[in-house]
Image (cartoon, rainbow, N blue to C red):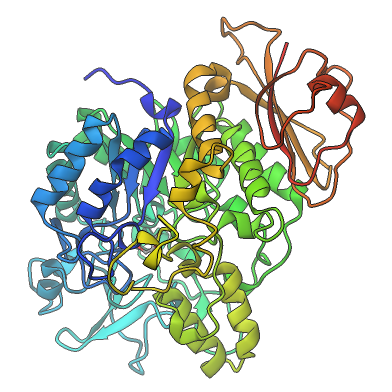
Length: 579
Ligand code: NOJ
């Protein structure tokens, strides 16, 4: 099959279906709701939709716990409505990337209900089982991502099963070839239905180092109590590339599809290995290094231990991935998804400079080499929320973390709530703000989670009708990818790496390209609320600079003079063409 790299020039838009648009007034977003908003996505100009899981699920983790991989969650609609949505996307030239969650299933999946019934059930080996320790306690001291032990006791077999997330998300055993065949078959089911690819949930956890070599190490003890962070023990096992290569040969190579693997704790070496066009398996990864820079590394409280971002660290991290993957793989570019806080609140200023800083962050991100991802509402500069009561939150990670931190570890509840305001996943999951009307136009009923309080100011209706809005800035930036080959292929060179407030980088023709050697793109971003002075290397001349996109009006005096004589304004972002 002839394949092109269309996913390199694409921009992907992520939909979190529960919070996107509700068509039937039950307060929960659904597939017909998505279909009703496709014109909006077309206007924005995105090429691909990544749809978070819509499969049947008891919703312990909002669909990331799947009980039937071939059925649609009843709250979201039917397979027929799925087909209508997909056809509507394709009519508009938009492709659909499904979420593939196959490191674990739901404990309500028939594989697991069978597997847990007896040790000799044919499905038993689809999951990961270990004997209790002599005193009956769990086999290891590893803490799950959503707190508690990763091991849950199963009475009928007298064993523990592994769950890296909640106990309703048992990990699948990829060492079993039959399980792998099941996964490939369900992938074909959706690809044959017309979908265009997969985002693969925690895909680097499918090969567990200790499963491959039969060991069962205890995690290093770094805090009081039995449970210790043990995530690094379960990622990036030695068979990861082998499994994914098999998936490529069995499935992916037979379709012209897009793939992105979520890969916590991935290194640049893995990025290169897994996304290499010949010897790799996936088009790109979601790595996390830039998402971890505002947490205290190695802290027992993980991502909840906050620290301010040091801008040179962000630049260095972005550049390590730019340099490592150029010509040898491909980067995904993201600041936002359903697990992360809103970028304008996290890296910008959602109060005084909400609009400017959101546009600046768009410039910063989309200017790099890679495929950009826009998470629903990012294009409106939707902001974090600060619900006053823990009971207002819905996310299993947040609720479990709060319970353990406050009730079991005795931490200060106000401080824990503050870290939830900064990092909680529900920041990204409040309903999409379509209008300033009741329930922001998301539903005619009661939304499953509260709305942000700022719907009168921040909503799609306003943004679409205002040519200076963040929405239209994203639209223009997305369109530039189609007309500026350098934005896609250009080599990235970081300028002023140590500047504490400025991000500046060049995109120049890649070696061996036929492009005009004298031409370059320059990205300039002020990450602060104060004017930012800087001096570029004399070889970088802005004398004949042309403005491709910027978030402030350009004065009559002209761009070159402006850049010579004035600092960048608060959160100013510029994309320039140099000649
Ligand atoms: C990563 C997903 O993005 C997150 O939402 C989910 O909770 C975990 N994987 C478990 O599936």
